Image (cartoon, rainbow, N blue to C red):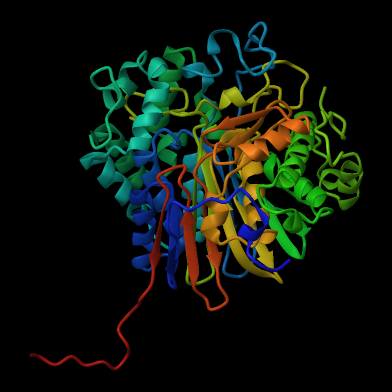
Length: 559
């Protein structure tokens, strides 16, 4: 299909941000200070891994509602030798937790993960064993070139001297204020007068700066075997939480191989289980491959209808057979096979919405951040990290100065299901640090935050790039849709005429301000340059390195 995608749609939109271009490196994250921290490492001679870890530590300071050292995540690393690997630093269920530890909330038909007293959502009982800090430090030791003390320095600086709150941070504090006000420590920083910090006010985290300084000196052992861990464990014990010293000392990261699928001549690489995303992105693309999506056009009722149907299929299968592969037999080969896609595609009605059940058997008795970095040597990192919901458990650990995760909310409190609780079980998430290759050459690396809406949004970005031929900036900013079987959420920029057409096909259409969060991405060009893009849904900022050293042999005279 040739021509501009705008010629084949009524859903025209205009980008709100500009991409950045460079030749020596690129860092894109959801805060300008974090992107700048990563770019500083590249400018100092570091590689993409150094840049990524510096960015992540800085994000714990400037995007505290999304990411923290008491969190978890998944990193997709492509090394200069062309190899791909995933570093799984996902949180795990504390050893003291059992399948029936929580009680399901009566009448919680829509979200069966709701529990009595919101114990798996807010407070100490919602905190799972953290993996982020260990994963970051191990990744830096294995693949980076700079000392931990150097890459953590920008984070310490911003925590100790403070930074200006953005309107986005203000809105996030406002959204969580009702629960956060119940915790004195977190309120002291983000609701100092009982009201959310206003945009422009300074956020100072002096206690967290001390924690980061200690980590810079002692590494991840400061938490997993040292005194910072004692502070965390003592807090858990005093407040009914489950994390013990044994949970911390026994925690291990896992290196995993990517899920791979071919889509219209492109090779798509995504995260394997326990992440559900790579499997189901492959599944959805395999089904969509049977339709001429480019000819149908971007944002048309026909295209959105097919997107909605494959999303419902993927979520039906995800509910039945996703999870930690050490606990659940995830049928990866079947779910990602072209034959299975053909079976599912044959059942799709091109004119009517349907309800879908799982096509695989059950095999057992919303807020994150993403950053992408690349260097001039061929190393690339796409990593998604989180403390789960906005401000995680909506408490702050005194003595550490950081907000812990509420990952326990991602487990099914009902025994006997694929995502049920079990001691040591790793979190199943939708994190989607994706990369796309053409003829063996890396072209795109991308990802975003957004809970269960992450992998559907990442899939749509890949379709935008491959089928619709969008620019990188267009692909990350384009209107998105989402459903898991109930309402079909469409971003408000989708025209009324298209919403009406979808409704006539049987979709329950719901216009929403946003679907998922701020995507960021890097594109690699034939001439060795790269472009970085971030979308309007967060404070995303690409920072590029161009230019270079003086030309050899230059001699400067005096005026």
